[in-house]
Amino acid sequence: DAKTTQPNSMESNEEEPVHLPCNHSTISGTDYIHWYRQLPSQGPEYVIHGLTSNVNNRMASLAIAEDRKSSTLILHRATLRDAAVYYCILKGGSNYKLTFGKGTLLTVNP
Amino acid sequence: NAGVMQNPRHLVRRRGQEARLRCSPMKGHSHVYWYRQLPEEGLKFMVYLQKENIIDESGMPKERFSAEFPKEGPSILRIQQVVRGDSAAYFCASSPSDSNYGYTFGSGTRLTVV
Image (cartoon, rainbow over all chains, first blue to last red):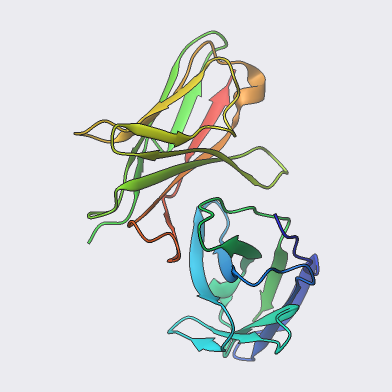
């Protein structure tokens, strides 16, 4: 499986935007970029995914670099409920497995 | 539309007992995946099932662990003769047939072996 690299931790203030980076220099042409998050004592929660174009949904935006070697998850206005571990995962079109790394622990300060 | 339901939320078993973890996928989802999260470790894939079929059990320990997803009823992850090292959070996820969509996870079962 292609690997992703994320910072171990990031900090943000409430109501401010948060940009969570992910490097995936060995991404293949058929790999989708998926983001999940895991709140304390909860199961992972799907956030967003994309292939080449930037994507928006009600939770977040995903900005994908033109060469696809990196991406950024954008939370437009962080809330305390966004404090979680965020995972960036590459998933090939026919591959059903999610390979979770250590992710980024996001702390949101009030 | 209820999400993925897992029960029990917490399960305590003595060494040597059996643990049965249940997972009811979202309505309309026919694909079920089990993941395990050991303390201070990441989530690891265990098994992928469709109704009445095990598609991939490459992440399951070879002994004591089994999984099923019968035609009727929830998916079951069964751990026989539990040991302390089985203590972990076990998560179930489900998806519709198209795996390019995101998976929906349950809240997990936290197994403690004493």
